[in-house]
Amino acid sequence: MMRHSGRTHPLPSYVSPSTPNRRNPISLLRLVIPASRNRKNGLPNQLGPAHSPDGWRCSTMSYYFAIVGTQDNPLFEYEFGTSKQGGDGQSRFTEQVRHLNQFILHSSLDIAEEVQWSSGQMYLKCIDKFFNNYISCFVTGGNVKFLLLHQPTTPTSTATSRSSTAIGANPTSPATEEAIKMFFTEVYDNWVKAIMNPFYKANMEVRSPIFRARVAAAGRKYL
Image 1 (cartoon, rainbow, N blue to C red):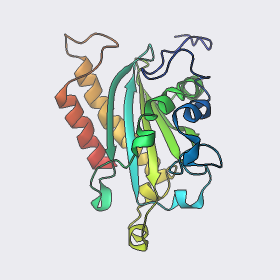
Image 2 (tube, rainbow, N blue to C red):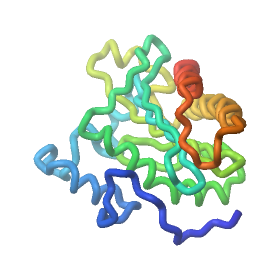
Image 3 (cartoon, rainbow, N blue to C red):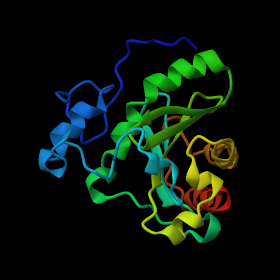
Image 4 (cartoon, rainbow, N blue to C red):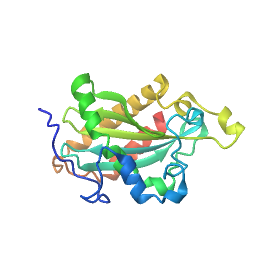
């Protein structure tokens, strides 16, 4: 399959055609987030600096998982949190940034394709970073992309910091990458079973509660 670098990608439903460059999420953030939230750069403090030391000392992760079809159309999405080491499995995305998750993942599609054609692997590891949001990617044999946005949550107490795991403490550590790989692999196995349904058509949204439950189980098992 040939890659067309200049093709047009469909935008998430909340992004109008007049929205600034899709490869520049900063421009969109400044449109939808009041500057008063952070007078220094117009961004919510929750996003934090890209190289904040606290970003590496976290005990939990919030995850936003999406499956994107060959036409860059969303096929499935699921949000969850850390379940390891006593985590409750709930995401910690704040309301002011939750609706931006789709856009952040969408803006990483070009990078995913660049890495895809140069790597030759299905699991591309962490391909992009936007502030303290990290995007990992897995590409199926049918060129469907699994994208996982993982956002560290800074602990609010010393006790929380002590309970940090390797997965929660470093979004790009070997332990984290291996855990995400196992998650992707298990989801892929269930994805193959789901699309083998004779009633399923390519690039059709997956609404199966069984598939969703299995994705949730994989998240609890590995992340």
